[in-house]
Length: 72
Image 1: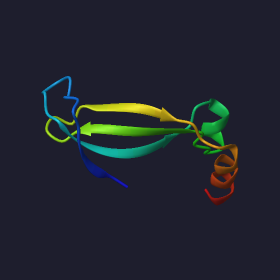
Image 2: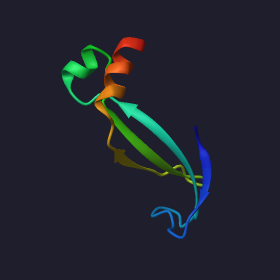
Image 3: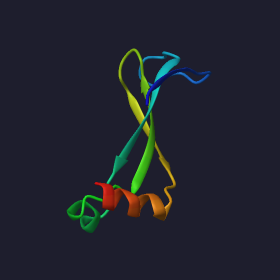
Image 4: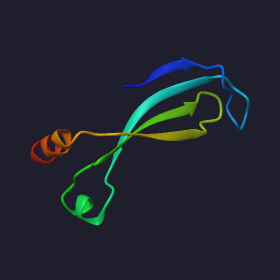
C-alpha cells in the first residue's frame, strides 16, 4: 500500500517535500533466497518529483516469516 506523505524534511536530491511511502520485502541470506523467504521488511520513501528513494528497515516477527514460507 502506498500513500502520499508531506514532510518537513526535504529530498536531498531536489528539495521536494512530498514523498510516496511504501513497503518492500527482501530475502537476506542465501538460504532465504533459495527457499523464497523474505525475512527483511523495509519502509520506503520515494520523492514524488525525482524518484529518489530511501529504505528504512522494519523488524519482522518470526511468525510472519514462517507464514510467508508456507503461503508463498
